[in-house]
Length: 85
View 1: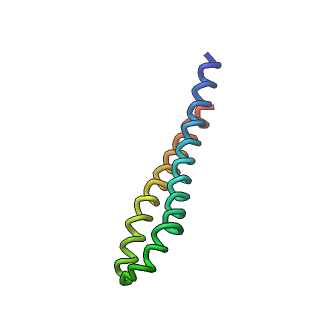
View 2 (view 1 turned 45 degrees about the horizontal axis):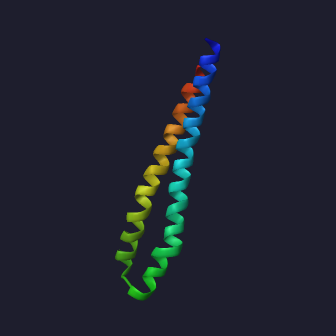
View 3 (view 1 turned 45 degrees about the vertical axis):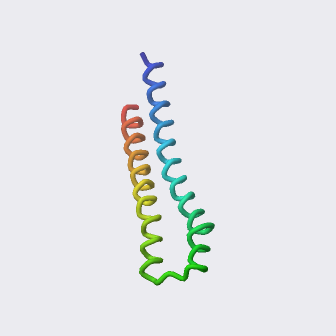
């Protein structure tokens, strides 16, 4: 029975790490997209400041939400897994 419990804790820790990785990958991808596509696209088009802000917000708000939920899930899964020990 203890082996199954330990296996469940290991699976939960793995799931928590997967959620944390998902959040980090969302931030990394957004930073890369901003640097490689969004900012260079501003140069030839010359959008106004409002359009630039909306474009950046359209990219970073969803990425921030994904990162926050990934971190939230990671913390709670680890809390449940480690509280059972």
